Image 1 (tube, rainbow, N blue to C red):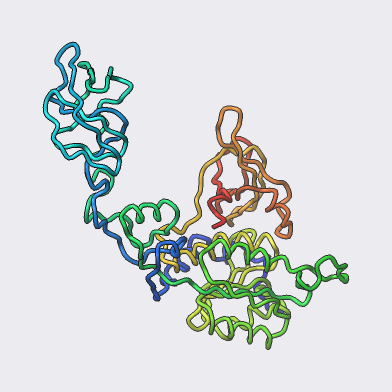
Image 2 (cartoon, rainbow, N blue to C red):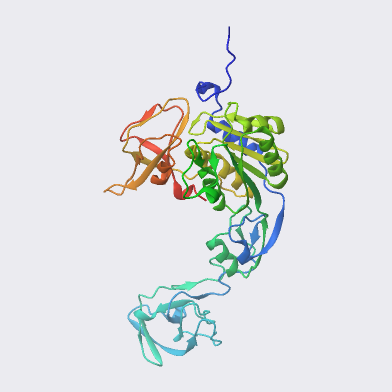
Length: 423
């Protein structure tokens, strides 16, 4: 008698989809949200530009002084020794000196003030000898010094921000400096999510209570909500879905009707109670299901109607790792962002890390600087996919490539800092 074996977490790695191929399939299957809107600048924080923006003006609009001092013509700089110049007026920021500066003359000027006609150099006040009517300069003055030229920062008609740029503090400041108060951005993605399992208990109903044997607080829903909240998306929490096909089907259909992206946790293996897998194959188009990675081997991706679907594992660490490696980059791509991949750096590992060749592993680590200022990273310890406290103890993920069988102290490893992953 031959047993027909179903897919499982003990399948050989060569039967699983490599992580890089999964990323390529994912990227090819996604499209940027089609809806756009125009918003006031203050309301557009975190949003993504859907068009290039050209500057309508030069910045600065006029040549101006970069320092407090005296505006002069370079013709007044002596070849040797010193020269005494007659002060003919004052230029303030916001108050223009309307006269002309001739050779042998100077204008008292303050930072940001428009350069007077005829002046092309500013001598800082610390490098002169001055009275109310005269200022003495020497031959060390450099022609053209301490002057910001018109258009030096931004030139009129220059593309200052490109399509796909997320508007954060610096970008908003640039637009405000150009007098731009309305911007065209992509509309927010709608992301629906739910967790599955008869053993799950909602925290808002059972907090501070003693659970019955075998029951668990629904931590994954809170982790997913926290990670989604760091992205500029509209979040729809569909709660806990119990382990049966009817409830799972209803939840998936509701999510597909109301959201651009669906994210679930649990029920994506091949067991009798894994109804997410069953219903997804029934309702959707499956792109991939099993990946050569740890944690997170059972990870389903595809389409249900017009919505992109991500079926994440049930183990808490696997949920967070698969979200950060696949769901978050996908959402960023659909938002229209130019840069979506996790930020990585190299560090020297100080721990012995064991793994099986053939799969990519994401192990929790602590990144720091050694006494010489070099980046080092160590393991947080045991790496079980259910040890959610290990994520809290970590500040990075250590990425070990599929062709590696482990890491020894002193080896260089790839690291994804949490500050570049969460949000």
